[in-house]
Amino acid sequence: METRAISATVARFLLESKKLLINGEWMESSSSDLLPVMNPATGERLTYIAAGNEEDVDRAVAAARAALEKGDWKKMTPMDRSKLLWKIADLIDLHADELAELETLDNGKPISISRNGDVKASSNVFRYYAGWPTKIVGETNPVSNGNYLNYTVREPVGVVGQIIPWNYPLMMAAWKLAPALAVGATVILKPAEQTSLTAIRLGELLIEAGVPAGVVNIVTGTGKKAGAAIANHPRIDKVAFTGSTEVGRHIMQAGAVNIKRTSLELGGKSPNIIFADADLEAASLGASEGVFYNMGQDCTAGSRVFVQRQVYEQVLERIVQYAENLRVGNGLDPLTDIGPIVSEEQVERISSYVEIGLEEGATLMSGGKRVTDGVLKHGHFIQPTVFANARNDSRIAQEEIFGPFVSVIPFDDAEEVISLANDSIYGLGAGIWTRDIGRAHSMAKSIKSGMIWINSYGAVDPASPFGGYKMSGYGREMGAYAIDLYTETKTVWVKMD
Ligand code: ADP
Image 1 (cartoon, rainbow, N blue to C red):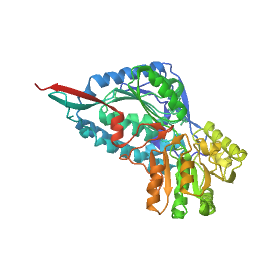
Image 2: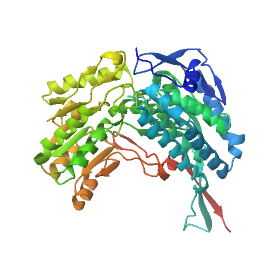
Image 3: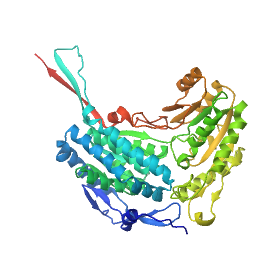
Image 4: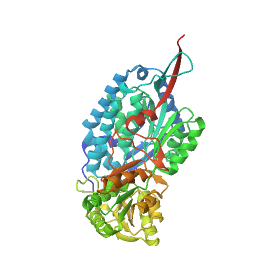
């Protein structure tokens, strides 16, 4: 079996099983139960994490509540929080190589994505929100029903549960933590059980940066135990969730217990639409990268590519060529484009859609097979897969596959493609490729999704709202929107006479 050299720093980190962070201390779960952490590229066990349970979540909530209501965190000024967030960003940058290596070992993604994508995006989001604490303002309101001064203040929403998925483990932790800390909330973070290591390392960096005890608690464990305990907890004021639509529904239902604020960033089946007048080289590349980046394990993956009929064959050929040139391998190898899928369960799910696509009558143009030869035989690898002539109402074009799997679908005109693109339970992202500026904007207006990319696909930035329509969830992360997610508005009436 292939074992690539792991740096001494990461090897040291993996040596001991990882604990829960509660009230500023690393501790075992009350049950002492552990979960193994597997390397998806080799099938080897990397280490163990603590399997948190209801009692652990209770302890974390008590710590978070105490930190919210009294102590150092409450005394910190907005400027203090700015400095703290900036320091966290600096520490992430300082440990960027180590975090990237850990992410690739744990999640499988190519090291170039970990290093230049995830880790960089994580420090960026902390740096962006470092600017916010001093700019969260209320309003004075011109009321007419008496001689009043009426003003609003923004207050932290309270104790926040943050439940995150395995596709961008560190980056999801950063997206969630940075705005919550900017407003002065306190947090119980639950990373995905498959990929908790970078969140745990981030926890160590938060302590090093000076985040007071109890402000960020990290409870690792399964969704069914630790996740559900957070979703059900009556003393958690808000849950921010990123993950599947199915679990999102559970989170909403569980939140009813105490009318929790919830924000949900869920699945997608995003259309990437290429008109015949587009720059076809750029569009084909954008469509390919838009679905194969991060092995397609991306809620905004452009997994339905619609191509206008007169250029359909040309674009399809380019996408197939792109897929066939992708190098499948261990993510630690700098030449790897497609790393392993996160788990055996996921790679099996993806494979099952190859059968479904064939049964539905779509044409398999490329890929579709598990990669099991040589050093890859113990990992969860699958070839990038391209299906042509899929029907938009077929399962492969309607269900979120969450893998390197694309359906390329022909269309004739704008009206048809708008109705096909919108015929989905999801509405997260959409790409539009055309040189006709009027058409680009009218398409942007007609597509029901939270994010539209014109002549590009998938760009994300801390200043730009991120989130979906329909069953892709609700609430927007990033920008001022995330400040709204983590604050309550209080109105104050002052009688003036
Ligand atoms: P994915 O399909 O990406 O694995 P999930 O929605 O299953 O997405 O998981 C996303 C996160 O939700 C993970 O941290 C997982 O542990 C957690 N989770 C799963 N089931 C539940 C649940 N019933 N309640 C709360 N959290 C859950």
